[in-house]
Amino acid sequence: MPRLRLALGQTNPIVGDLVGNSEQILDAARRASAQGADLLAVGEMAISGYPIEDLASRPSFLADCHAAVQSLAKELQDAGLGDLAVIVGHPDGPFEPRLLGTSNAPTAIAQNCASVIQHGHVTARYAKHHLPNYSVFDEYRIFIPGDELLVLRIKGVDVAVIVCEDLWRDGGPVGRVLDADAGLLVVINASPFERDKDEVRLPLVTRRAVETNTTVAYVNIVGGQDDLVFDGDSVVVDGAGTILARAPQFAEHLLVVDLEVSPATDFSASAASLPRNVKRVTLADGPDQKPPLDPDLATLPDDREQVWNALVLGLRDYVGKNGFRSVILGLSGGIDSAVCAAIAADALGADRVWGVSMPSRYSSEHSRSDADDLADNIGLHYSTEAIADLVLPIETQLKLTGTAAENVQARIRGIILMGLSNLDGHLVLTTGNKTELSVGYSTIYGDSAGGFAPIKDVPKMLVWELARWRNEAAIARGEVPPIPANSIDKPPSAELRPDQTDQDSLPPYEVLDAILDAYITRALGREDVIALGFDEETVDFVTKLVDHSEWKRRQGAIGPKISHMAFGRDRRLPITYRPTV
Image 1 (tube, rainbow, N blue to C red):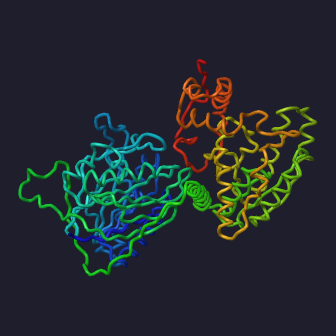
Image 2 (cartoon, rainbow, N blue to C red):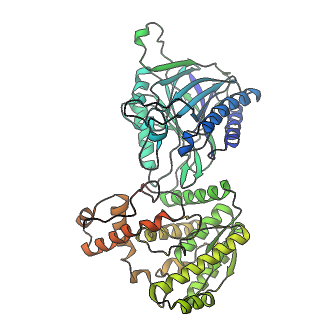
Image 3 (cartoon, rainbow, N blue to C red):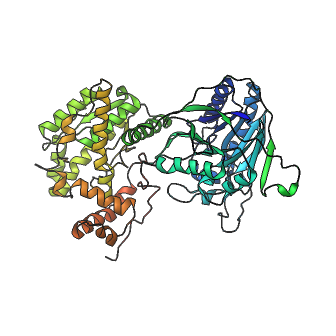
């Protein structure tokens, strides 16, 4: 059996940073070559970053991306890495706008491509066939689809190359992989993290490997890009469904594996035997003498740790890639701000986190002490700015009572945080969770003011789970648990009036989260939610809150997507909406 040494480069690109992204790929190539790799593959759009959204409609950007691929080929050659074959993802164009049946928007001028580089040149190119148009993806509108399968011959092995969605679609290029009798299928991806996504992704890779009797190598980018978090988790699975190698989640990594796969088939005897729409390219072979490699098999942590790691990476990269030096947030003593502070400290280090306690005349003593304890446990910068004397003149002059008076407190807190942000250059973190955002349980221009929302896609019940997990993890490492036990155990409250708790105006969170999961995540209608066994009056109350809060959500900060249905790109509903019931 032919032996091929394959390297998968899990890089962390930034959209538009063509020089920096290329340097990441060049570094991966250096390390792959040092380990004797014959072939290196990096992720989808690794040159440009992903998603590029309407940059795909900008001819100058596409021309720059095309030039960056050519430049990378020269840099690899100049660095003495010309023998290494490199598969790199990038947008290509600009092309003449074209309409291919009903499969593409007529204004698209770009393609989502994988190019093969060797000996200083681009030797082959593949354009993605299937363009997703669901969830966070908008490729149907901005790309022109390809229709040809690419098969590379290297070290006596036929290697088919496809891009991301092409693996997911039945009857697409994967079917031609079987016809082409390739021994290895390389899939380059930009697949965002979602909770439990591995329960779908790995079985798909395994199924495709077994269906085609082909080793499948799946390489994914890693890192935060706006509200998306890419988790890496690159994997190689053989035709029997056995995992041969696996990269860790949420970290840049070079996965190198020796593969013994079926030898290339000789199609030269009869042109008629060649599968249609298959382009074959023969690459030069590198040296054969290589010591064997130890297996590289990462294991996935449990669900709570995966979610925590996604939130940490999403915040770290948003801060770092956008040039912020530090973050600031309000510390109320409650569970949400405590979890956000712990995420921020894990992402950036406590020395880059500023917490501000802003007690009002309604703030309880235990809330103040819980905020103090949190700051001590984490070691972040901490100050107190009392708001009672700032609120009173506004309440008095405007004669505010009830909700209007409560909201002024939240807005004064927002003003304080934004003022300190302007003064010292901090990024303000909002601390609202998904449950609160769903039902509008926040004050617009108050506690919703800020630039990034670390737990925006985390339901309230999961916030508590994450807090308990983070404390357990600290204890297991012999560290001080960051989150005070009282912040976890006490009834949640906004403390905007005497003796207030969240359950004064909302159903119990275990019930509320279950209804929201059915109505938002599963997109069930009112009658279907009631049919699940929920009280009709409660369902009507909750769904009305959700529908009437869309205007608030449109103005909120972005935050890391961890679920199948996050607010923002996933869920696009009208603000002006009057249901018939």
